[in-house]
Image (cartoon, rainbow, N blue to C red):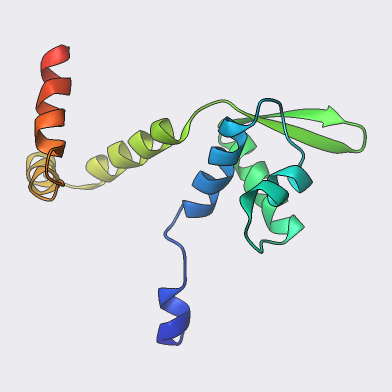
Length: 122
């Protein structure tokens, strides 16, 4: 793959996050066409349908029949999905303590203190 194509690729899960963000912001369930219109990106209709189907299959979106089409509503939010990914990444390492230590070392300014506050609230 040429370097310019590689750099223009989205990170894994980015499209699902974008679509989920649209669903969460909507006051009612949306059709794939409505989701596509609200995304403001040049995704094809079939790509949006594929992403919505994946979200439904993963239990992150509900699907309701609407005539010959479906409408989708969120069953989770973007923060929950990000937390699931972080937990999966932590579980993928063989040394959880080292993974956590390196994660904390890479936090943005203020995040370490926020993490301390969150841990002390429990």
